[in-house]
Length: 204
Image (tube, rainbow, N blue to C red):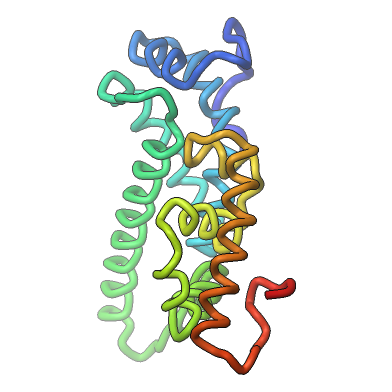
């Protein structure tokens, strides 16, 4: 669901920093431009962490409300990392609020045993990617490669979305993703010489 009106008066090639300066000056069209640029990958990443579409929608909206109020405090050229920090914090707040509500409802209706929520897509993937030999192998690759792997494999972001999140060129994302997969397979092979298949697929 779209939260902002169509953009007018801002070129698509305007930098995040320029748009944020305009937002800080009260330009709602600049905020809409930032939304058009970043909402897609933010929604994808939030959905990987939360299976409730309503919560995701509210968190996404709260994220850009925060941007409207706090744009003047942003430093740097790319907004992706800053936006994700805001969104992740809003998601934590939303989950805590929901947990408090559930606890109150359970206290009022002790005879009703609510089923445990199904794990999100991210939780299911992380269970396989962050524990055991795979988790150990992940710790052995460099942080810059690991963050690309998490964005593209765990979060399922596209190359363009990952580039916006990390503030790096799309070509760099592709290069790092290939290097990350190769290093992870090599680390797994070192940990498990028996040659068990990699969770990332492809030859070792």
